[in-house]
Image (cartoon, rainbow, N blue to C red; front, side, top):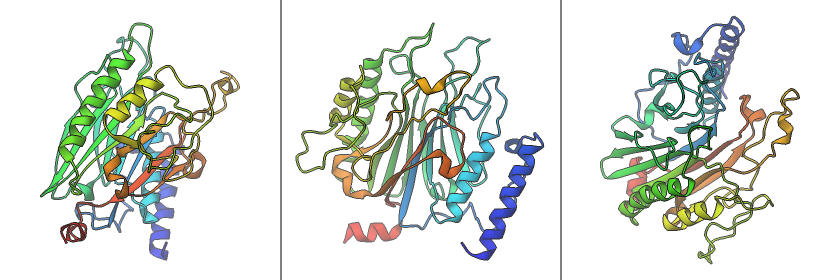
Length: 344
């Protein structure tokens, strides 16, 4: 990081901390002014696109007020950019947004949010998902969002399609909701409807290197060391936690195979816990076991487009969540140099 960027970042961090300490709401104030080196109207020219997923365990308080965690998230994204590791797309689960009007406003990003509607009016806010997309990815790109459907009683579904000329990236953000007292999920039906939609997208992409489907999210299902694609003899086995399979594991694996997807983490990089509850002595949260329930997937015929992947523990980016952040990079098919390579 050069001196100008370093000073810029330090000023930004100090301002964030000051606002949080004073109890202010930085998400609703125009204070992200220190990003002088960032031009949100210029299209991305990097050779890669980085996608990530994070269960935020609430960006809003359960009473509906904005929490300081949006500032933490802004800092995470800004720090990544200053270190030349821009997160172009961040899929978020459990925003706790009470209404559609409660958006996540972070300079340089566009928010696509969906709040949980199936709850009692007097109940605390919960659920909710959203996508933060770096504006450089949207320049010259048409976007469409599908997020109003309910699959098997579950509202944890978004499909974002980005198109630029002959290229297309389709991103699925998934949050497999758990049963609540008055709201039950038909879990196998959720998987069936979800993966039918994903299968349609993968089929439309075909073998075209300029079309790609990516799936990210919190699936709330432990697979352990069950292999998602045992039919692919040439593919290395996926490593994972040693644990009994979850009751929805077979349904999830069936959906993955039906859609011709493959899990990235545990293959492209070492496996690690994705759900790691913060110890809370008052609630004895340590009784909740750590596990692997968050996944990133890509069609098996596009495996070579995944360049790198990793799992960033929350203590490495100072964000208050029970989950770690999963990320992976793909070839930037929107970049003209990528087209030159694929057309030759």
